[in-house]
Length: 243
Image (cartoon, helix red, strand yellow):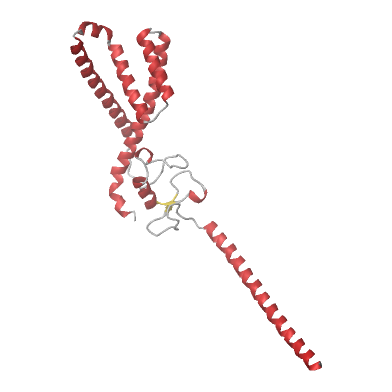
């Protein structure tokens, strides 16, 4: 019996030693894992990465901060940004960050100065308006010839009414094209109808206010299109270097 007890004690000591060793090894592994996680978190926080490809800065492709974005989306590779602007964005938004809504500032961009963009925008707006006037003139002339009453026709459609009709049609097409407010468009049309029927002074003031508001939006749309198109064609030759 004594020999068996000695053997049992020895076996129990061996098992306990093995268990304690395994526990110590497991605790050591957990400690190493926790240390690695902490170190990786520290490294991740300290390293700037591109918000598109999630890579760090490169020798020939440095990280830049072209807009007012902060945090993890602050930095982006210049080539990634150029590729995204010319292949992933609409022409109207090609020079604007989709997150912070500010314009990009990149030293290597080839851009026209703002005066030239404003001039081209105003030119395109004027050409569009006069083309519409020409089209309406042909329509009015054809309509007058059909009804064979050119005198009364010209008496009704005065020069002022003629231009009001041009502005009305131009802005109506714009609102329909841009999916604008149908309520504002209905109010605009109703104001025009009141001018034709009653010719109140207050209706003229409201009509001018609506026209200025819509024309400002149209000019902004032309400006963004001109800015985007000029940027695309001036910087298109660099797109082959992106990736």
